[in-house]
Each structure stands twice: as structure tokens, then as C-alpha cells.
Image (cartoon, rainbow, N blue to C red; front, side, top):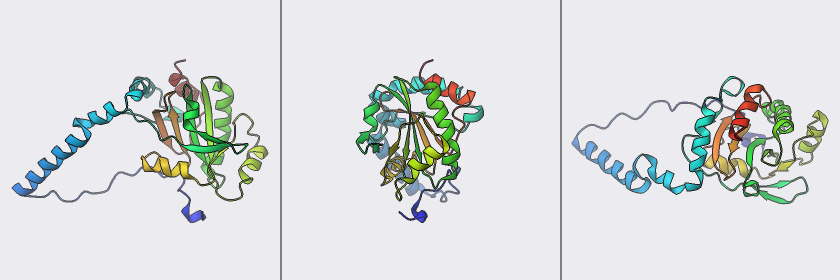
Amino acid sequence: MDHSEHPSTYPPPRAREGRQGARKGPLALVAAVVGLGTLAAVYGVVGAGRNVGEPACRSALDVARRLESLAHGEVAAVRVADEPRKLPDLAFRNAAGEPKTLADWRGHTVLLNLWATWCVPCRKEMPALDALQQKLGGPDFEVVAVNIDTRNLEKPKDWLREVGISHLAYYSDANAKVFQELKAVGKAIGMPTTLLVDPNGCELASIAGPAEWASDDGVKLVSGALGR
């Protein structure tokens, strides 16, 4: 993958600019009503169908609501989930090259981070992620940082050693498919991308861009997800 194909580094979410002019006349009104009726039939009224389709994620909403008051200061850019959403069962490999998926962390809360050596904000953020793992990592929580470099696959490992990252386990996806899968569900628009995931594999919160995860604000946010 050429550098031109790399996802951009944490672009701020942009509001959609402009809308098409409203259609005028009774025919347009009828079409709009029919369209809304069709969507309601397919998805359920006001997204109710989606909620019903994710029963395993309903408890995640209660946790997410608890996190709303904690997403401030150094983690103010974190967006707390407002609907039950189960994440794709992302696949990657560990340091030994063995296949892993997000499902391997069922029963554990995860801070999933996608990073690359060509991403300057990713490199700057990595020590904070390492420190967060040192502070909170254990049987019920892990920072799972997945490298998506697609060339010179030894470079990420060498870089981690050079800067003294010692508490994070090494995970990688040399095809960067994890980024594409998250992008497909609207959860990856640039790098770094980070998601807080509950023990059922459901999204609690996400952020496009870096954060000071080892700060008091970051630790309190993650601790809130752990019920501490």
C-alpha cells in the first residue's frame, strides 16, 4: 500500500456542507412520506429495530451514559456511544504471528487502538497508551494496539523497542483490513483510531485522533468503563 493510500491522520469530523434544495409540490411530499414509511418498515421507528437487533449491547448503553460526564479535559474529544452497536469481529495477529480476533477478548474491556509508524500522532500517543496499560491493565482490561504498517513489518517492532514501549503486547494487521472494516461501519476516518469496547464486544466510546490516555482524565474514563 503506497503512502497515498494510507488513511489520513486524525482529520476533524466535518459537518456535511449544504443540502439539496427541498423538493416542492404535493408529489414531492407524497414521495417523502412513502420513503419514510419504507425506512420505518425496514429499520424500525427511530432506530428501534437496530436496538432490538443488538440485545447483547443494551447493557453497554448504561455504561456509556455513565461515561458521558467523564469525557472531558484530556479526553474531551472522546465520543460516547449513543446506541447499541456490536463491532465487527476484527482479525489480526499477535507477535508470534498467531491469528487473533476481537472475540478473543470477550469478558474483558478493551481499549482498541489502530496505529502505524508513518502516523506522527500515533507515535506521540503510544507512550500514553503504554502507561495506561501499566496502570490499569489486568484480568479485566487490556490496551490492544494493532499496528497497520503494510511494508517493512519489522519496523514497528524496532520502533517500539527504541522508544521503550514495554507494557503493550504487539498486535498487527499487515493488510490494514481492520481499518477498512471499522471505516465501513463509520468508526475509522483517520489515524489514530481508538475505541473503548465492553466485554460483549460492543462499542462504549470512540475517538478519531490522539488523547492523553494516561492522564487523570483518561484513567478516570477507562476506570468508569470498568466500574471502578
